[in-house]
Length: 138
Image (cartoon, rainbow, N blue to C red; front, side, top):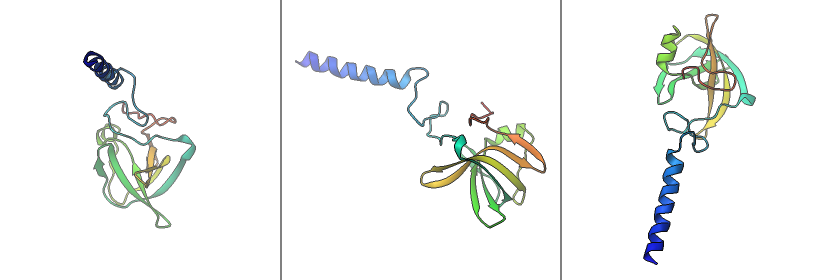
């Protein structure tokens, strides 16, 4: 009986380890790199917002976050891209910049968020994700 119990425990442990470490497998909603949970880009919710960068960009675990204030006063929180990727593209963002951001409106942790696909500043457009939402920096 004791041997059967040990065998069952070892089998369960092996199955769990195989699932966790098998290449190409990941739990739903888990990013392939970085391991953290990320919002899923949904092209069906794609929209564009225009406005003023209300405060300096904030660094987050998943890149830069922006707060864009639209002409009507509504604040839109935006997840953009890693700072290094933007610097490599020659993009510099300052409070007060006029921007247009196109991306997917999603809800993360109960709060609305726009996951940027592209950003336009002074007539120059930078694509940070493709139309399916795959990041360009990877």
